[in-house]
Image (cartoon, rainbow, N blue to C red):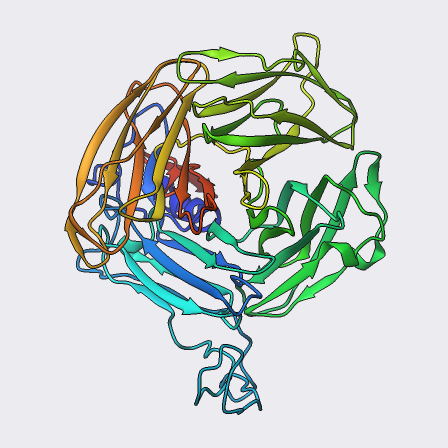
Length: 522
């Protein structure tokens, strides 16, 4: 009789390989502090991020900032330095070199002499992070700045975050456009896009892999699905990014649309750049996965116009309660006791200046008899009036969970908003050193149940450059949802951008290996 042994340690390694590249060590090691009743939370060994091409404007000035918090390297191999690099998502020529432009005019569109236009080198890093706890930044000017793709491993992988912030100082797209660089995936929902005549919305699809991806784009308006054969089977070449103008997918001009991006093969990063001829522009990030309840945190207190866009997924309509969680409690905005969203359709609701001077968060939940229809949702938020308006988008988001990071913050202009929908929450906020110097600072905040707390975050002492903010939910805390607003006003225009702070997925659950399972062979 032969006896072979199947170790649960090996099973854990195999599981980690397919669920998140988790670092796995033997039970009892420092990184495997698992409860006997549940799986261990172990640091991921590899992370991927994708950033879209920043802008079509020659006046665009873009800052990239990357950061990995300290404390996520417990599972790293001893002495491993790790790497975290973002490079241009540009397909090289067959010999491995980037394609070059033949435009060698004496002046570029900005009037600068001596510039030879060429595509970025896909083998040259735009931004490299060298160690956890210290952010790194890079800048790019004009419309030639490419999409970026990259990966982090070793101690730099758990919680690796990157932010792309673009300032366009003039023109129809004058604005601050900000977005978190996102993980590649196969399914994205974007409520809040538009094909209206005043809008120019692009879906940016970025492929991080060595083989082409094939994506489909579906549009859903107030009457349901909008037919568009052009949105089917869009090829995104390897290591490349493809922008798709929504108005080329349909002849219908719709003020409010939900965009659904899926892939038939491969995976992509997807984000929508939404530009309004009258009210600026910003990136619309994907909504949290469809669910019966959603939370949209961090509406600025001085918002002059707020519009809610909701899509109901599934066979049944959705009847929802709408609550605004403010500084002292939550209430139902006037005229929104309940809202009805038909199955497979996009509905929009004008909340006007709902916050009335204090920051708030929107809580969406099914009515008592409204069923459990999954929804996705987002807000279009306007600050300013007349010809000095600026727009940002806040999608529904997942909770902070263990930890989340906003990578790009300045000496002035950052505001953190926290909401605790069900029970009181406690969060610790750490301001990293600056990209050019400074010492980290930490502060802890308590958020009352059913409220929103907006704070100016701690600044690194002796700050030089930009810095990162890391939010950690504390033990015993209720769930907390968060966003970061970055305001960069210019010429009287309250230009701003808002990024939500979902869990950074820096760890993965791996079943604890406490004994061997034996299989007997005769």
